[in-house]
Length: 398
Picture: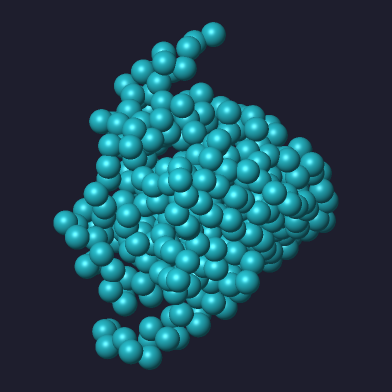
């Protein structure tokens, strides 16, 4: 068996194109093979995440000079779509991890300790979970009740959350809290809590309609961390330039994967119908043509968002690139893709008929529909629409 050092060396020599090919292979083989049991048992997709670790994919975004593969956002989007197409839970876990890595990469004045940590993400393939929601904030990402307080070992916090991304399986967590005890709820920082820094209390049960393998139950986390793990860049900046756009883009990539697979199953079903009765499938063919357009719209919106975010991150001062138009555009991406994926799966069910309604068989679409229903709730669309309404009240652009 190869040592971790030997595997890390292989990962560092891999190109983004080679890693993308590996991830697509993992999606088609490992993720697809275990998707049904992951969903039925509401269990973490251990097989696909381990395969991604073995491939070095958890270090996809980490720069080459820090031991990662140095993939760009567009390549990671393709990875998320490939995984989402075969197992949405695997795709979402992978996407959430990459969002956390991107946030860490955008921290201003990145010190040697943080750079060493990013090296460990690549070398050890550490899985990072997210803890941004909090009981008592009504789902508002930009507010925190918990705060960091001084401690002889650095800082400490205690936070109660209704959902923490794969909390029992994560090696480390990125947590939003108030900067200090007397800080306003909107004055937030991100804290990196590494394995050994935190304990999990009151771990709840994750028994949901869809995305069952993401294993993100309610829990309370109490942690004591060294001071450098309280990231210096205000969360409002990291949220604007990284967490929100990366979340909406990579989530949408997973949803595109769900939509593509639903369309593909509907296409194969219609072709089977046409072979049996060439004149009896007009309605299904018309539905399928409309579905093709809907999938293309999702893909085009996602491509445009990736190009826009790539330009932002290439700027000398990304924060200055985040204007009202950019915020509206990234919010619109989330609104559109999260609602369109459900419609696409529904229409695919109409094409496939009872074969899609069954929970077994090559045309089954029940898991796809249940996974798609989570999309509008991940940062609730009503909250995003309310934000857009406020922005449009002062927006003077075209």
